Length: 441
Ligand SMILES: Cc1cc2nc3c(=O)[nH]c(=O)nc-3n(C[C@H](O)[C@H](O)[C@H](O)COP(=O)(O)OP(=O)(O)OC[C@H]3O[C@@H](n4cnc5c(N)ncnc54)[C@H](O)[C@@H]3O)c2cc1C
Image (cartoon, rainbow, N blue to C red; front, top):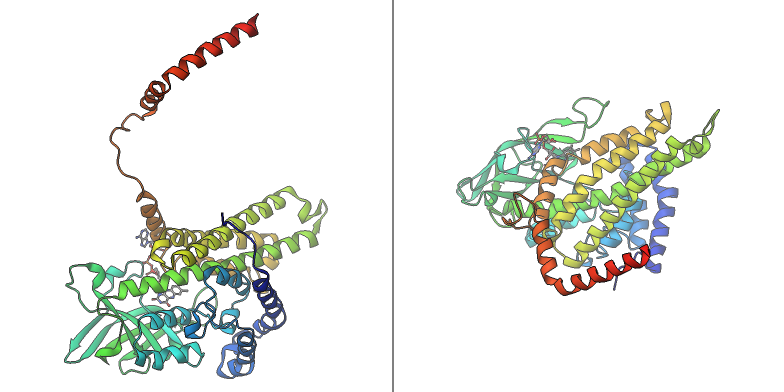
């Protein structure tokens, strides 16, 4: 019997260190704005914090020890990510920022020694950055509709096509590109391959950098609209086997979805904390906001939603540790992928609302949170697609039984039960009749 909700005391000490470090060192930096992400800002502010994280043995915890990580497993990672999720800067400080974390994971899994030397170790050391270039401007939800083509010309691949929302392409030295290599393969899931494309390869062109959310300069965002025109690459630019893109991408996205959910637990907790603080601090003529029943109802609903979400995320992490296979846990991963934007959106909007005008201002985090919640419902596949996956996984355990319908089978089950317990039923009836007779007398 091994259900246990306790955190091991040694790991709790690490979590306590993270809590203090986030409050004292990471959160103050995030008030300096985007300057922190400049080359000088990284050198001056982020690197020293990264050193402290390394010294604590908390660097790149999503990776195993052979890759310079800690091999904590997903459950410990979930508890850690809850703390990191409070602040957007934290993943960079702890060496687990998307999309580099997922890209490093697949290069570690599928890369050759040369690819690891060129990209993996520099990525893990934070020396280079990467982008994942999969979605296309004509539609991202269905990978079977992608048209970017890689064609063999002698020993080289020649690539043509367009990709959309390749996050951080403008800052990246390598693009992890998803392209059709075998359009006629019988199995539609074996038609595409993944390539590692140095961003400075001739023919790679960033057409626009799309921004997310309201405000910001048009074209000055982080989501790269990338055109590939006659991009020529050697054969060994392939990552993994030819035709294996779908499988590789699922490995990458499976982990990424869980890690987003883990960090969202932390972001929701932050919103709920702010909401509670506001409720006990602000008064109307009827008393504190905290004393009003409709406010209490919102707080209760938010707490229940967060607690259920958190337990589902932790359970999914535990299942991944147990099975060591994202595919076997895809039902649970799909469920938390669906739950993430909903819980985040509901708590962030309630928190914003309770803060009144301040809540919708750019001095509080709620508007950014609401946008992030919308992003969570789209990036790595829209909610609808994950609901379909979840439903299919649930239905897998059921087979048709034509005896049950069109009329349901209760009468049949009753007949079977009566036949099975015929003797006992007779005794029961006699005993019941005797009891009624005694009661009447
Ligand atoms: C902030 C952000 C960062 C991103 N980063 C990356 C990245 O680094 N690399 C990358 O390759 N991509 C990235 N994406 C792209 C993301 O993967 C796609 O946006 C996503 O797959 C949806 O594709 P789409 O935007 O083309 O929407 P569409 O495919 O056009 O879908 C639009 C809507 O149609 C509906 N829909 C679509 N398919 C179905 C279906 N089967 N059943 C029911 N309804 C459906 C859904 O409501 C969906 O939201 C990012 C997106 C965002 C928002």
